[in-house]
Image (cartoon, rainbow, N blue to C red; front, top):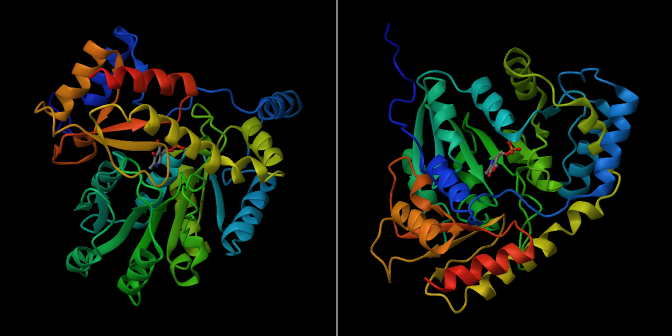
Length: 380
Ligand SMILES: Cc1ncc(COP(=O)(O)O)c(C=O)c1O
């Protein structure tokens, strides 16, 4: 029997190779954006309490109303848009699943979807699974912000969706007001849906602000906004997320969710609803992470790496092409094996594997990890 692979081009990835080496060499992990510091005791207690009280009952597919109401309140407080918790807010088992459900709900075979590379590696695969065409537009170093003229040139009658991600994984760029205006101009009077991946919404540095699609009525009217509790409460192993969108889009997203996914875990939803009573948890995140970014940057000052601006999110890019001509994949392996520190190659975030001699480092780690990682990188 033969099967035709849907991902024939994907072999074993550098992500799994780096994971394997990381464990084998017990390397300092600056590769994965999974926070390794303690998270809120209160959240654990809330979850324990909910497990005792609610047992194992499945939550409604679209999420507990108590949580959806809190989400709607938060968005209205932060970004001014009022989403109706009943028809426009959907709790999802993860941001990844929310992205998949959104793409599957509105993108048909033959449609084109514009997204920006380097990118979170799921977008292109999710688009391709619909029989649609992923149209990658490259972001250029050092700023890695969209070239809107290029976007304009790529838009045609088949363009169904544009995916944006700010703060951006892996480049740490953040959309500016000028970017938003350019986007507004491009989609005006079109049938293009915007899928906005805002999982790092609370991590914007240096006095800048997060520009959510929910803050702009004309964009919110055509946007699906996805965000994730795993990033808000540093619980990368708890998969609870949500998406908000106008009722007409939400209705279609919920159909995909119902056929393909289960609701997010019930006790976690109760625990998160209780946590959301206090906005201070997420309002202080930018400060905490900016300090971590600065600690890593300070530790790398004496290194040979060239650090690119990190404006938001969990990541910082570091160039090495000026002192070493290894490929970025070889460099990642070299650093794990010979220096005991794990990073990721930026080429892994491009569909064509573009290699610019740049690595992605994360600072979503405890301070000792960051200091030790930087110390090891200074020896390179
Ligand atoms: C840009 C981006 N989107 C989505 C996700 C997925 O988030 P979740 O863990 O909630 O599925 C990630 C996780 O790393 C991410 O970096």
